[in-house]
Amino acid sequence: MTTYSQLAQQIIKHVGEPGNIEHITHCATRLRFTLKDKNKVNPEALYGLPEVVKLVDSPSQFQIVIGPKVDQVCSAIKELLGEQTPAAEETTAQGSWISRLLATLSAIFTPYIGVLAGVGVVKGIVVLLQTMNLVDTHSYVFTVFNALSSGVFVMLPLFIAVTASERFKTNKFTALALTAAMIFPLTDPSVPGAFHIMGLALNVKIYGGAVIPAVFAVLFLSYVERWLKKIIPELAAFVFVPCLSLIICGFVVFTLIGPIADYVGVGIANGYAWLYNLSPVISGALLAGIGQLFVVFGVHWGIIPLALINIQVNGYDTIMAMFMSAVMGQFGAAFGAIFIARNLKDKQIAISASISAFFGITEPALYGVNLKYRMLFVFGCIGAALGGGITGLLGVKTYSFLPVLNVFELGLFSGPDSKMIYEVFAIIVAFTVPAVLTIIYGKTRKLVASPAS
Image 1 (cartoon, rainbow, N blue to C red):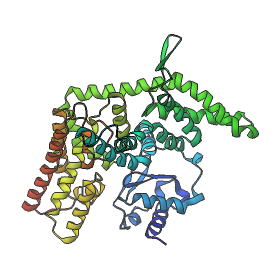
Image 2: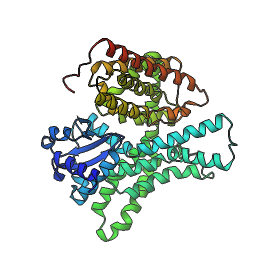
Image 3: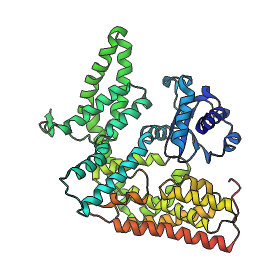
Image 4: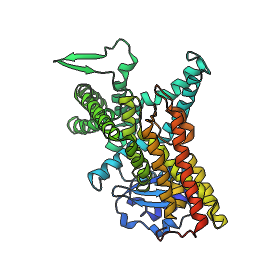
């Protein structure tokens, strides 16, 4: 039996056995459980597992921070659960509407976040090749690189269809067919940009990379499909449920849901831009300064749709530019801890946490080092606020989505109004300040772990 299988068995046991698990998914570092009864969880036993970094009990999910190996652990758990997992239809929403919304966003966007992160690095390579004139933009090499880096974001509704169909309990392939239809007009030059019906201009070429229209399209499909299954005899359901679902949802989505959802997305982007422009410096400092608190409470993936909407509507985003400093601030504090560690074990933990933070994964740094010694977390927030203030002051933007924030994706800050060099300056400040403060703090007084650690 593999190490992952053994760990998976222990986790299943300590969260209340298979019968207590309604759903499991994961993000970059966390197992995210939907449980029937959280009282059946054994926190002490879970903390006794060496691979478990932290437990986070949110109203809608029970989260176990594992680290970079979370994908293998999650796969092992799913393999062991097999058919024992309760039917998806039995899953019930828990917590407030905000908790349910965050849980839904997490379920829809986190499963493919690793792919988006990898594509982001490829996109950075494309931008550098283009801006430095290293290859002909009409060459085969550039064309392949550009297709690999752009295809995912243009076809994002297809990715949303897969995870949203699981969340909303509808047929995955019908959802794919519906969102593929939304994207199709972009592939056919003969399709007009807009149709004028009853005095309304309906644009059918607006759904490439669309977030909100795709989510609501699949949500609507789930209701239509369930309704059709009730009224169509079983013998005919195999053909006519997907057929009628696509016809009904297709016309409603293109005529009503899509345009309205698109306007909602534009409104969200404009609302954020209005708040940001009230004072870019304060906005940058505040959002970057508290950015890692979103990670602490396990709701950081709720930011993803807003950043994606900004890219789709405006062609650029400022949120992730600021959050890059939030990551680098905690990285700096954990890095500084290497030089003040009192023993070999603490030094090894700080080194390991720093390496993870360098690649944009901050949970090991947060739970293993910075929150353990509270002032280090504070120093990280101070550095982040300074870096975020700089990005706001200088108007730094990213021109492609940054799902994981690390230096390998700096190329995505290059664009029509490129200020990549300012982002480099901001993250240097965000990293250096907490690193120096941590070293000074550690050299002048004895570090004492917080009681909660």
